[in-house]
Length: 150
Image 1 (cartoon, rainbow, N blue to C red):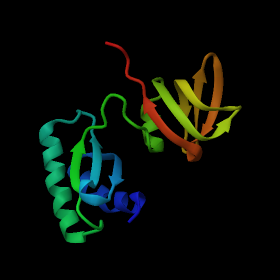
Image 2 (tube, rainbow, N blue to C red):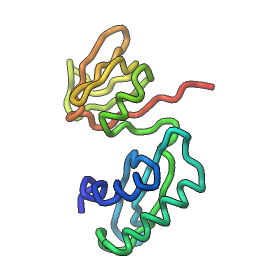
Image 3 (tube, rainbow, N blue to C red):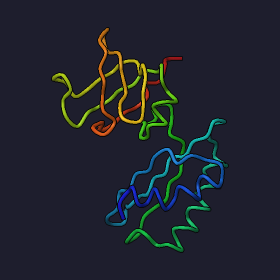
């Protein structure tokens, strides 16, 4: 099962509990397989939230059995340096500082660190060192928030 298929399976259960499925990672193989789920909501995420989602997702995975072999289920918050994986994430964090890695070079570079100026469902616009770059969402490899120093 692909990560997208797994997302489609898990998302309705997580959303019914009042959370957003921010991201997931699947690393299977051997005894150390891991399914890592990152949840979020406006009020933030605490240990009780992770436990509640873990119990519900674990029950769903036991019934559906979508993944082969043994693995550990981990549920956590996306953290301060959260990955941005959906268009909605980019909309929410306009004005924030991001680090972005592209699959293919744009204007001769693959890495960008700057301010997210705007976004739509297909592109983001970042200001990096005084220059504006339009980056297609479809070719972003990874995008992360850069936490502000305290």
